[in-house]
Amino acid sequence: MITTDICIIGAGPVGLFAVFEAGLLKMRCHLIDVLPQVGGQLSEIYPHKPIYDIPGYPTVKAQELIDKQMEQIAPFSPTFTLGERVEELQKQDDGSYHVIGSEGTTIHCQVVVIAGGLGCFEPRKPDLSGLEKFEKNNVHYMVRNPEHFRDKKIVIAGGGDSALDWTVFLADIAKELTLVHRSDSFRGAPDSADKVYQLAKDGKINLLLSHNLVELQGNGSLQSIHMTNKQKEDVIVNTEYFIPLYGLSPKLGPIGNWGLNIDKNAIEVNTFDYSTNVERIYAIGDINTYPGKLKLILCGYHEAALMCQSAFKYVYPDQKLSFKYTTVNGVNAF
Image (cartoon, rainbow, N blue to C red):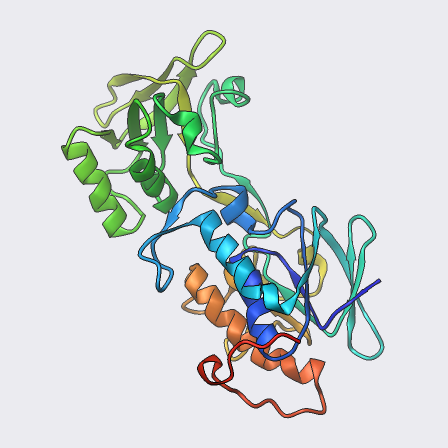
């Protein structure tokens, strides 16, 4: 059995930052994640994607951010169980918990922190003919390695941040890039949308707004995509790869059976400390919900800091918490 102060379910950027905040308060952490590596969605889905809203970084690639966070928490020696899903929580007589993994791993902790991002997730797939036929080789629901698309013809579909960001990033890598969106405006960040419009104006990408996907076409491998425009006219775009970026469909999995208050696949929390309705269980990051919630890494960091301040009372019930700035105390390991 593994014994720790805090068990963090999810080893993404928010879960990793919780380790840092807990370490400042002399609380040990063990992280468990279904993915085979730390980093959550950042490492699994878009490790090369640039992120623009982390303080101090005008731009930072997703995997670089995770690497820096691992460096930041190294002094606190967190432990990890990777490639294993949490199946069960067992509350003990003293209020602590046993966290049980799918492979039989048992973690004894005083506090449980759910930082599982979107939970168990899978990509949202577009409804168009021929999709399954080309999924193994020519359809990618995430960009793991941008170099795979160097000097290739690609079509990206979507109107959110991911579609916009990857269009900007891959514009100089692909031989020919087309961004297609069913609406005439984007849902993503205005700055990213402006960059896409400028790329189209400069002739570096093809931008097809108010177009609906109909069918993927090809003999053995993908050769073209059939779509229709606003006037219901047929449009054929030659391509080698199709990248539909419509976001992820969240599924809570076993978390949904733990007696937590759930609203639309998200866990309701108290914004005072991001506690759930079940004592000693907190939820931080994209997996929680509350009025005014913003699904930003930055906001998750804030939630992690307040959570740790609250969790202290369960780890050290006989001690009084005294908040001190790292600029004064520095970062001290155990």
